[in-house]
Length: 559
Image 1: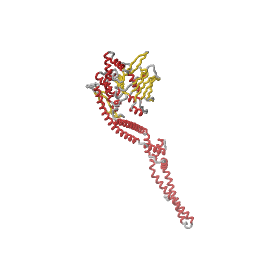
Image 2: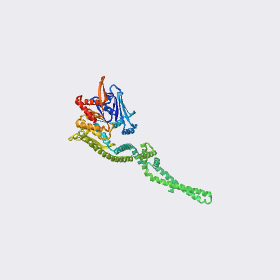
Image 3: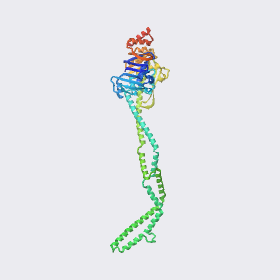
Image 4: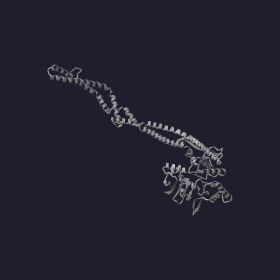
């Protein structure tokens, strides 16, 4: 609960300090006295914007302070430890200091004298205090808020399921992002690799197998181009070695004749025998040479028809070297490098694996989404029935309330689009709450829904929620507020003496002007007389009827 609130240099407030009580705390005062400044200051403390920054600091002052002391709880301690703060067994001291600097208003926040950021404080504030007034329709205009109202009523299993959904959803979004990145990278790589792929294709089709191919082809080409001269030289050599025409003696015939001559005397002289053996060896070499020259001459005749193909191949290879500014060995190396590059990572397989993982996560999510939606709808029906019942008690006998579900784009919060539809009269169509509900109806609706939810903050601040109500409806509203105040602290700004009399503690806000400056102050009405006098003023004056009515209200409240 809110134990103490200290405001310094806030708008019309110079300095006030309020010690609140358990149960129902009533705040009254004339219109314009500054009652709402208390509510607005609490809202601002937790990051709200109820007071514009330019009006936050009292004129003539350089800074302002909003300081609140709350009692702690098990829920609060859990939040503290989860967010890196020490748990508090007793109290929380929350402070906002705002100051002017370079024509701007800057703010610092602290929790138990430790710095805290605005976002964390906003989150903590939702656990500590809740606000409700006729202008608070915005809480139902937010899809997230409507979901939160339902989800807070669900089971622990539901919460565990929700955590699992958020984790899997986060994982799926990472996978989706990675998949998109890979697909885009693959596309860009494919685009950038067109030249590389074309080069590889050209080199593959070139069928480069030998580093010396050009040299080998040039040798062959040179041989074939000079085929006639080579042919003639070989033929002449063959004629000299072995005159096939027998027109004149050849080397082979002369050697043969020499061998025959030596054969006659070789048996008589060992040296001649050796000479003959040498000649026989020479004869064999000459015969081998004749055979080789004949074969070579035959090959030349057979390859002559390949000259065109050889020259084509030579032209192609030399053109390839010019095109890429690389020689054949370098081109073979480049081809092998490109082969390795194009096969080093199979992105298509990577993408397929990611897609399969994503599909598996989506399948899990779809099952969890369905489970979550089913429980939401069950809880929504219970909340719907509870609100309608309370509205009937509060004088809205013909009011109808429907929590409508439709499927939306999946997210970490599920697949449910939740709408709050309302109609006050039987002939009125159900429509979005904020577009059809009046101020008086809204105050009762807010109270009905907030009293129906199980998650209650330490403090509940009601701002003129009884405005425009009277008779039976007012009585039912007051009874409901009293019932709520049994379980939690309620701060209530009101102009209704009937409600004011029921408060456990009563504070009066007043405004006065001193030396041309306006001051808002607050005091606790500690005695029965003080409270009675305030009720009389609220009723409308010091007549005997007003005096009697005020007395009866206090007596009834005390009974």
